[in-house]
Amino acid sequence: MKYVSTRGRAPVLEFDDVLLTGLARDGGLYVPEEFPFFTASELREMRGLSYQELAVRVMLPFVEGSITEDELRAMVTDAYGSFRHPAVTPLKQIGTDDWLLELFHGPTLAFKDVALQLLGRLFDHVLKKRGQRVCIVGATSGDTGSAAIEACRDRESIDIIILHPKGRVSEVQRRQMTSVLSPNVRNLAIEGSFDDCQDLVKAMFNDEAFRDEMSLSAVNSINWARIMAQIVYYFWAGLSLGAPERSFTFAVPTGNFGNIYAGYAARRMGLPIDKLVVGSNRNDILTRFLNSGSMVIEGVEPSISPSMDIQVSSNFERLLFDYVDREGATVDAMMKEFRETGRMEMPQGGWRALCQLFEGRRYDDDATRTRIAGLYRDSGELLEPHSIIGVAAGRDCGRPEGSVLVSLATAHPAKFPDAVEQASGLRPGLPTWLGDLFERTERLDSAPNDVEAVKAYVRAAVAKVPA
Ligand SMILES: *Cc1c(COP(=O)(O)O)cnc(C)c1O
Image 1: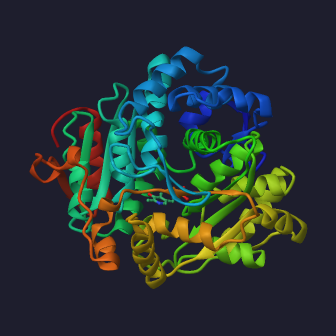
Image 2 (image 1 turned 180 degrees about the vertical axis):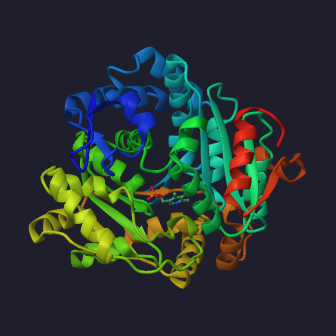
């Protein structure tokens, strides 16, 4: 499979290069030159496969030329063996033709594990084959750091260093990162804010000499392989619930648009999807766009669903590319305008076409809490703030008759115990296998908010000497 950039001016690459490259050289995102397609009879044959076997079928066309079927199968089996449910992403019924897809049974209790558990193994595999090593550096406000660490721990060709703002992540979040004692994992608490951490990471990547010397790399949400791994569970849900004979509405709590874009990709690949519903919190740039046709940047305000507190949704560019007939120059011009003015107008025809498939709904914190309490009262199902926004958006949207609703539950309620307790009066407990988290040994270092100090730390970590 070959991949092209959404801005049309970067080299066409094979999967393994796309994996390691992340952002394209022209500032765009890589997408497959062509989506693979499964016919209705091929879909019928895929029913009843295990999650792992289905994952191999769905992803194989995307890695062809870079990774063999047996290699892929080995990585998939290993990655999803770390999930605490035999169905990997189980479905749960909450109403008539109304289902939850639980994506939070991975090692850090959030949906990012589904993609990152595979991504870590793919990185390691390709790097080993090339005889290369990388040092993955990232900043976290709490949530994504642990998923990246769990993905990269004990991988032979990877070091990982995650910066977090000292004292400003929750204890569960910190412990999920710092209790991983693998020698290739380092946690660095920065005396500063999350923005400071992000600036430090940016400064290191912008220093070209340093970046090359340390072979710095990232596993951020624009990496194509993350999207690819997320496509699988749309097929899993659809095939489990009657596709291709039945069709579906997927409702997705959305931040960077990676998860819901994977749903769009599944539709391009033949899964019968009627509608994709974007759930937003008060940071609702996408919902405003879907209602108006203009994408307008506003400030970010903190909410009780922090993983959706975004100013812009980076993966939206992939969708835009398709809706302007894959004209890289058009995307380039639109993104340039957006960067310069904080505003982007979608051509009317493209926007109307997009609204046939996508719909957006917004819930502020009060509405989020009300819906958590309501679902618990009606069904006994206790959801955390991100997941409930998906359910609410799915139930409130104009779903075509007969369309099966599947709402994506993106985190375990115990990841957001305070918000859940405030809404419902119940404090969700950690699953038993994580019950000793508060007794586990922690290992972390700390550093001032100073780029030279952090660079020295990274240098020492890569050279494997104690900082
Ligand atoms: C990352 C995240 C999201 C948003 O997903 P995107 O792919 O960025 O749209 C939603 N919920 C949770 C719990 C997350 O961690």
